[in-house]
Amino acid sequence: ALNPKATHLAYVREVNGRWNLLVMDVATREIKNIAAYDNADVLEFWWLNDERLLYRVADMRIGIGQSDKYAVFAIDRDG
Image (tube, rainbow, N blue to C red):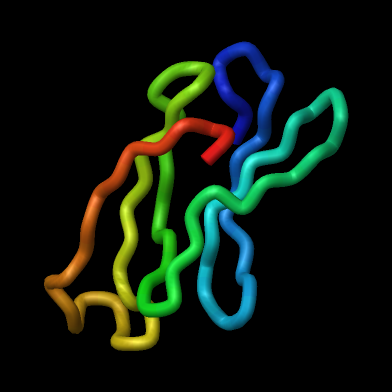
């Protein structure tokens, strides 16, 4: 998903068996992994504005609907 000014692209990608949140600068194509966990996966995210994202994590290895343990975080696009 693009931020409101369409300068950065955020997406979820599997890295080392876990789903991480990455952000790419559209102009330079530089990619930063801004949210990575050993025991959780990024499930979904939303741009709050051009600089900040909100995202939700849970352990996908347990299975959807089988765990009530999840968290919501906010982070700047540069980590």
